[in-house]
Image (cartoon, rainbow, N blue to C red; front, top):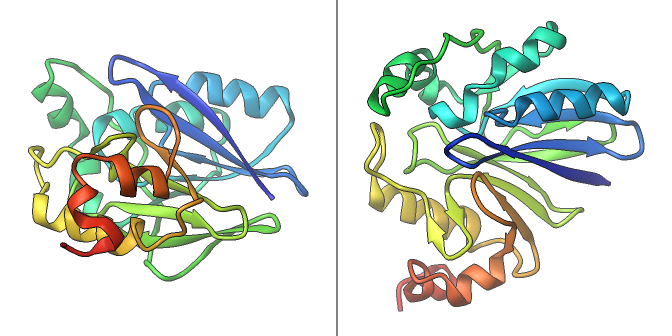
Length: 218
């Protein structure tokens, strides 16, 4: 069984997650942003076995804590879809767009291939390709646990912005129809910002998605 722990921080209010395989205490860090220091403390204080850093995409707020995690877990591989590598390597340019500064982050070590599952301990995430907010955006789905870590694809009552470099509204809506609205209504969604929600709640109440009830235009 996968346990999800949330660590929110920074001016962007980004959610970093620990996904913990309860039977083995193996875990992965997902999108370590400004909450990375709290995440690292939890790993150390609870004697968890951090196996990897998984990135849904490479926008600044989702990757600015990668180096902090790596400082205490130097052997942890960093997984990213190759279509977001340019964003990742340009993190300092991203920061400058917001009047901020950030150090370069450690180079990713592994590439996600959508459709190939990611195993940690006795748990597994299905990796689905969901571009639109970012060109290489992926989401992580655990069907047995009825949870999905969806990054900035969809939020409670909202969707990811598409006005940043690499964003495209029609591509995002297609990703939501294909990868989010096709999931069971009871599945819990853990987004990159804001509180958890469910597929059913967003299908019925999200003002951006109501016209797409059932995953298709009505």
